[in-house]
Image (cartoon, rainbow, N blue to C red; front, side):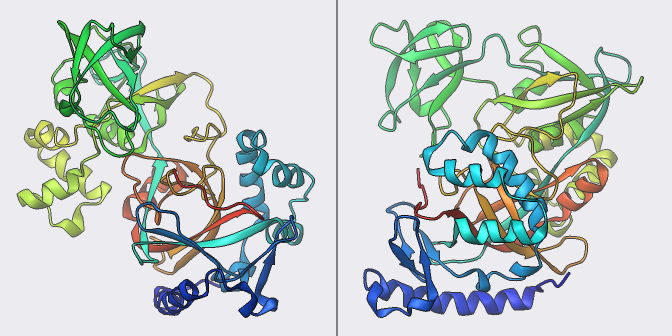
Length: 437
């Protein structure tokens, strides 16, 4: 397979930047553009290549391009991409704007020629930029396998928690960001802001940002307060307050299970317990690698997942300090029968090498994405048509992708090394504009 190296990507960035500036001057002047470079929509309306859609949010911009500009487009494994898109359609097929393409996908053969024709006929590619920048950051993630047990043993000592009994989620509106509000409980793990609520919540004490749709906390007397941080939980704050799904042998491996959001637990008798994301305390993710570099524990260049694991194994006295720097904490749900892959935010199993986590405020979950970045093992170009099927607390921005490498140690080694510039094209059904939340 031909691949695109980083120098070519940089040259493409320069050319694309020139085209983007030119496109801004061509908006709403469609008749002056060449008709040979036109994407025809099912409605009969035509959008020209270089048409720019700029919603009024976060400096994001989307530009229509031709498939010929996507690096190594013709060399894709379109059959694998189509199968991953069919998985997306399990959720998308109920949405009117996706019904036609999902129906057509089911009737399209998996051979490369038919799959390529399907994408080119039914989708329009949009290149994404943010704040005038075409390049964003691409990282990798995987599904780890932890050694441990269902019951606590001498080796398996570190609990994997389900949703705590006292964990309460309260929806808030876009205008509720500060001040005191009253909370009324609606059931065991949920509440509502209501005038007759008997609990007081000071919103300024919660980790609220522009994307926050709910506050997550607990009752303390007549107060509704933020839920425990990782440091508090690791120190025993959940003792007797949460179901324990199993126990891990290694606290650092358990930490990275939280970072990845899902995984599997292998018991001594060979049983596998799949652990999926159930909820989180909603504190923002904080990089322990950056903290370790700032403290002088490790050079920043060595703060990969593998480097962090090795250092903590050699310095157990710093374990609580380092892990406690990331206040974010994930609660899991368990399944005794592992599915074909971990379930992402879209609600469908992820496909190794063909799924990714994105910021769903800028990229529609389930949509195809064309990604151009660097392969962490070879250093050459990784150019692939994948599906946006997951999200993550550290995945913020329109040109930000977390690439799913799959399951196990080999996938973990690739994911741990991956942090490169990348470029993203969003494929949407013809006639559909990008959806920005």
